[in-house]
Amino acid sequence: MRLLVLAFFLLMSFQSHAARLTCNAEKLSFSFGGSNTIDFLQTAMKYQDFDFTSVKNVGDMQKVVKHKKALKSMYDMYKDSPFIWGETYQKMLPLCDENQKKTLFAKAFTYYENRWRMNSHYDPVEREEFSEYLFEFEMAGHTKSKFFHIRSYEHFMSIFEAAIQNIENNTDTMRAALKSKRENEKQEIQEMENEAKEMDRLIAEQKAANEKKRKMQEEIAAKQRELDRLKNQSFETSQSTNKQRGHSTSSNVGNRTIKPNSVICRSESAYDRQMQALAQNDHRLFSGCTVNERAVKGWFDDISMFSGTCTLLSSDRSRKMWVNCESVQD
Image 1 (cartoon, rainbow, N blue to C red):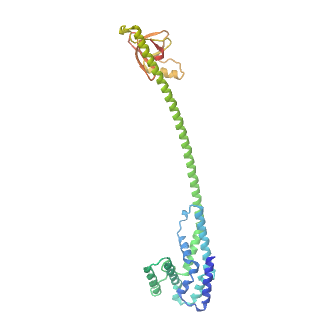
Image 2: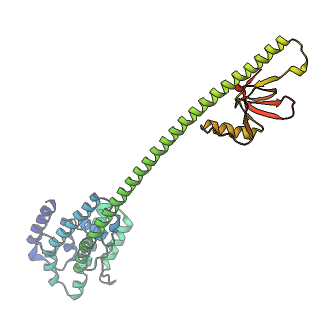
Image 3: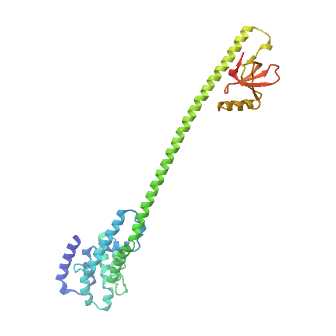
């Protein structure tokens, strides 16, 4: 609405001087200002080589579509509306000679660029360059505006046409980019959910392993207490026996009896194998082990505090026997 109001006042101004129109590029340049020509030109030039795959969300795509509508609206206004400089240009063009016709639009646009640059920032060097460029426009054979290199009315309009067409041609590209991004995000979310499930599984396994470890440590502690008890019991029994016998000969120290129906093994490996089987409710008797029917005399040799295993020597001390300490008595 603001643009139309500005254009309307410009139209009124130029209509009042229509009878005095001459081939004057500087006067033509004043008719450009009311339509914010530079702003729309820069937007159009932006979409000449725009990377439409950079559109990553709906908001960006809507912005591009909004720009296309604005460019199309201004293009139609430049082309058809009497409220914009197009009418002034068409009226002025017949008043120019053939050489002036070739450079009228480009020179007028240079005047417009000069004022635009002065309003945007003050640069004495650039102002001097613009003045020199305009002064020698025809003599130096300039054919395009100094800053945006606009050559003609047709060239100016073609920039808008190309931008509008480029956006229309790449609408599917933008949609495909958005679809691909949504699919990638969906896949990333699924992968994150899978990772979370895997993490939960590993945590559950770790908790189960910790609980199993705790129970094993409790069992080991219980066995150790039992072994300590057996060791103390064996020591107390030995001490009691020594007290009862007084200072008897050393040949009686360590004399033990293996209870009837005890498992007796001739090697440590055979004993371990037999105990493992019994722990699994396997009651087979393995090679290297026997079950005694009567009490067997022996001599105490050693005790394993961890497993509760006692090692005894036979009565003639010629071989070793491995038995459960609970099966041994004084």
